[in-house]
Image (cartoon, rainbow, N blue to C red; front, top):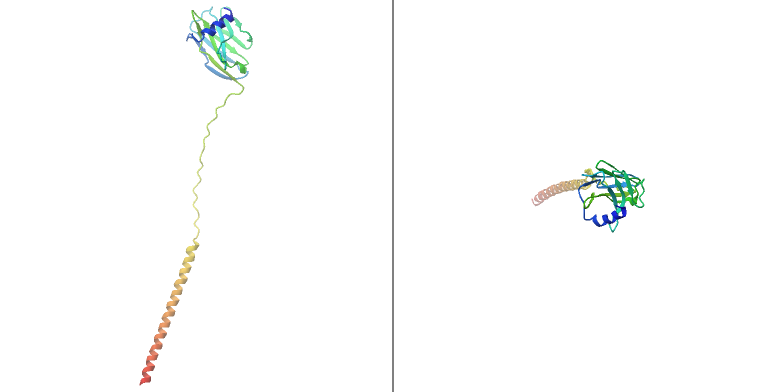
Amino acid sequence: MQPWLWLVFSVKLAALWSSSALVQTPDSKTLLTSQTLEISCEANTLSKTSLIYWLRQRQGSKDKRFEFLVSWNPSKGVAVYGEGVKKEHMIVFSHLSRSNLNLTRLKLEDSGTYFCMMIGSPQLIFGKGTELRVVDVLPTTAKPTKTTVKRKPCSVPPLKPQKGMTCGLVTLSLLVASILVLLVSLSVAVHFHCLRRKARIRFMKQFHK
């Protein structure tokens, strides 16, 4: 089958038939530019005459059409490349029931989903696909930052001497002293008054005799 005829059939039938008969790995991969990716496709029953086809859906493609990349004939060891595909960029080979596709010197435009396919009877058999994302810089996952609350030590304020209380004690002492002086003065005055009264009474009694 010519590659262009195969491409027409794959576009019409890819959405209708798939099978677990082809085990494709890895499921997805994110790589830097200039790196290499190896995609493996293993068939449960793969005869020496079975052709393995590799195709791609471009990332962001609206029509989801399949782009023919390369086909591999394990019995002859011959690869047939699609239009515009460089042999040194895509290397295909097989060993026993496994077929591999090596993508070398990856570019941003290599991003997409890659499928291996085998023409069965009567349907096309697809692998589950390998999603490739090519980036210039690998995304980094921000690490959660733990915020630690610093507790300030409880500080006990120093005891300050209470000036008001000291002043109050001094005032009270002065007041008490003043009262004592007043009482002493009053008692002295009363004593002198009593003495004067007695002297007056005694004088009056002598005068009337």
